Length: 396
Image (cartoon, rainbow, N blue to C red; front, top):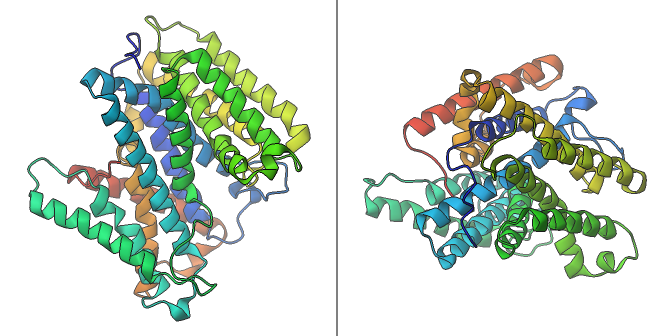
């Protein structure tokens, strides 16, 4: 793997802004999910609907941003002089951490036998959501090493204990990956993409080829009777290549924007790929439909097109026109994405475990519920600002 000499080496504020906006919308739609009587366009579409809403674009936006950050992350480590072993170790640890956290979160939601568990499911969920904070917190250099080790290894022991304290609804002890959770799916997609990115040295043409492979394999996996669909191992890989397609799209757009000596006034290749994503999604819709639940190629390609257009607008507004002040509202979340993703779950299970009823039922239905979801999202951003100030930041 060689250093990309032409790749920008400064912080790209428009990528941070896209990350911050995505996280804000994510908190909003997650809180809104428990609100009754809201319009369908503010919810995930059912699996058979052949449609998508803005809610169905939130997860792929995360994947797209992960992809946009990959070239910068690898280049920064290479410039720092990290060895291949160091880079691979970091990559595998990050992917594994996302997968582990995702599996714990999924098991906290359902699949347990409350009558057979030693601790209540609510307390189990609270500990499962809370323990990643001391384990993966980015401690300051002057933080006492003994306390850091106590918090980190103590958190790991708690997670290990939670595994054995979990009793499935089948009566078996221990968790199972019913599905990987959003973080787990991000972890797998990230792993597949960065392994390939490293093997091909981040070459644009090779990444485009990988995107084609991801879309093709995804399509074949949705055809009953195909070799991929019938083989459990190939189907497992194909399922994660579905999401890797969006990560790869982010890598491609990032390279087209930032791996060049001089930025053009109009980036026609990026515009071309946005159109290509749309056309591909449109053509494949006839065969597979649009479905986030099923992970159809049309959903991934339409999502990639939307993310590309949105980023291009932010790039024009912030990097070219230098209109950046408005983004300060979203930046606390952009700087601490994992913590802000976990924290609402910590709050939810805390109130459940201690039987606290903070929000009146009035705010769980209709317009008041929508307003509360917006207020809650704003509060979370303010909480992140405080956490960032006091160096409470998760770093995988």
